[in-house]
Length: 465
Image (cartoon, rainbow, N blue to C red):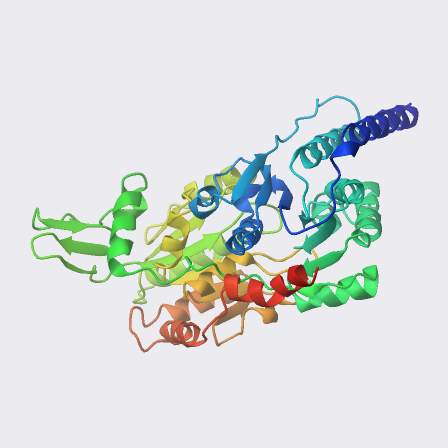
């Protein structure tokens, strides 16, 4: 019974697509330098790379239609740029009845119509720059629109959608196999392709016959070390809502303003770190299945025991930022651990506060494993932009970003992470320890920023077309 229904729904969807295309047939104009549609079938606020694309295009005089969901507020630089027009789309909620595969097919057909309408409604774009994943159904829809409106399609490959789906459904599930076939076939229809690693570039060429240009994620200019004055303001702001940032002891003088990490004498403006302050550890996550935060919790548990055994190492305030489906699950685990020397805080930060916090931290931890083994964690890119050393869990192409024992450390399990934390904080906050060595290496590395990388990689392609 399901097959005839699916066929009928597909036929209706295609018929409506045809009607919409006929409706807009008269609006087709030749390709020329003008508007670029930067599109993602996801949350714009949590798609920093696509925001960076939009800002770079605007910086070079292009008008930009930035299309996606608006669950999370984008960065102010994006919102305030007069050349960037945000085109919000709504995330569709499908009625939870019938077989799941049927629900999924109905959702895809609805998204086809929604995207088609949104992409045909905007002014004629010279290019549609599309993020993948998610690519189902956005790649096919974008290609159809480009065909009708004589625009060019650029796909920015962040990962493979089918590998992310396989985390939930398993590698042999029909939907996963369909998604893999879909990406392979429709990905070849693009005019140009970018990807995030050389490993993905080689895989696209070998297995998909797609030629791509590697455009590494690079930190935006606002990811940098945070001056102590701004650190203090941030800590005092966060202390209003989160106990972890409040001072451990009351100030002896009413004119001294204290946080857990800093103290300001308002009489003379003297500002310094608190003596014997805790170490500030930060990790960023989308709280999904591809990041196992039990690894971090187990490592912190071992670290706590190390202190209980009498070893003189600092206490830790661990800040885990982000939101996602598993956040409440891990918050319950955290509440049950009853740490004495470790505090864990899971705030949701404003876009402008996140780089300030990274630039104030002592160490970052990354638990991103990559469903394909071919993408790199942008959170580490941002941390490196702030000259923040990182401990990152191993996966196949991580060496393209994290250089073990140079700008951070790579671990494989909770025991190895625990030993790294003990070692890195054993001389804290001495400027002679390995943690500070990693920071100096990052400071001296003269990292390429997003604008420079984009101008070298993307701008020539657009200029030649």
